[in-house]
Amino acid sequence: MRTSFVRLFGVVLLTVAVAACATRQGIDANAPGLSGTAAPGSAEDFSVNVGDRVFFSVDSVQLSSTAQATLQRQAAWLKLYPTVAVTVQGHADERGTREYNLALSAQRAEVVRSYLAGLGVDPARLRTIAYGKERPVATCDAESCWSQNRRAVTAVGG
Image (cartoon, rainbow, N blue to C red; front, side):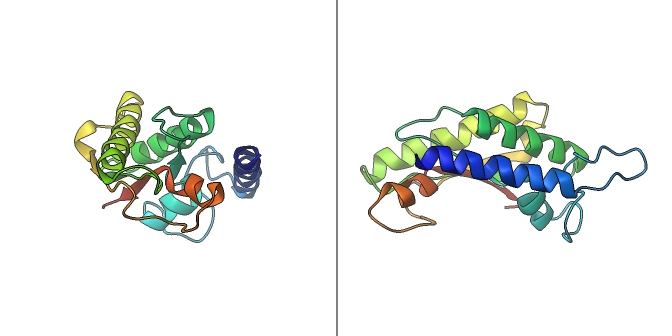
């Protein structure tokens, strides 16, 4: 049920963002970086207007269709700003050993890096780092927190 809610929330958020975009002299209104007050090409622009993270299922490195859509937007943005480099940060939830979670988070970061490279982003611009369970964004002993921590974050300039 939580996954359905997260997907629905993502679709609603994307719909609102696309609706808010204004067409600029021949530029696709759905192109990343065209809404909000963030400076185009900035880390804030990337995070707010494109989406900087994708989520994974338990013990998985498989990209969902939602994750793939986010990464396609990331690739389009990175093509608009060819001098920007990013670091893909892999994360895991708190369950499992430190070693297991480091390996899993490294795989998650690499899957995202490979997917972006496959979409035409120069691999030299894509660095990866694995944090395992060391940097949770939510801390509680429940799936609602664990699901937020199973992620890969694409950090601009990081």
